[in-house]
Image (cartoon, rainbow, N blue to C red; front, top):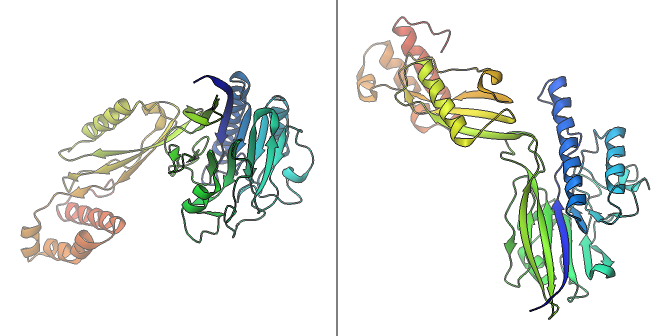
Length: 382
């Protein structure tokens, strides 16, 4: 069937420009803020290179409590450099629409539309046969359900939603969008943000699609992997129906990663290092990777599990080590041991066997140190 129209759309959000990175040093935090700005500029270069028609920014473009004048100027300049593209922003809980925000300043170019109300509103783009729907956070919470009882007004148009929300989380205080409301509304694609881990576009029973774009670039180990956005191509066929294809675009400068390294059978630091090296090689981690290594498995009671590492020696951006190993011991023997060794084990046994993961790890470390000390070993490096 002959194709009559094709529209290119970019779905992004959760960029968090000028995020404070409060856990890092001043130098590192500024370095990470700069990296976020660079990643945003790469995104805008892609908009120009791919000749994107519509960009949907589903909220948390920046952190309003920390946004700088330089970042505001960057946004204005980048939007203005794409005059043929229409930008739609649905302010989220970190960049709500308020009277003193950049969004209400009148400084953004004419090709940028910012939704300003908590209730649903729409902008028609007749030259593209498209209608974009959205809403705004006007504070830290959005107690409403913006799609409840709503329907598209022109089913023949390409209907897009740009929204910061909690999807399928009943009674959420972050713009509750239920699966029933979304299906009944009748949009072809719903571009969501708020969850920082991307979800592949999902298809509803009525043929509509929705997705969370995930963060553009991770800011912590809670946001692992390479951040990016979704590039969509909407095609209208001769029968006026719309079909949408999607592509994942990765743009992040750096990534956070977590690797579990089993130290079972390891008794020297060199052996532990070799297992770390294997994990790095197998996963392709490099100088742009912040890596958290979680040691697991069973190791000798007197083995000093590594506690620190130098990122430069591993050709990484950052590395940290977490010990969740358990010391090898004969539980049955220790349970009957009449000496202080047995007393120590019996004291720690409830936490070792029934505690939370954190409690078990702490109890295992205490047992390791205790058994090593009772054997006359140096415990200062354990």
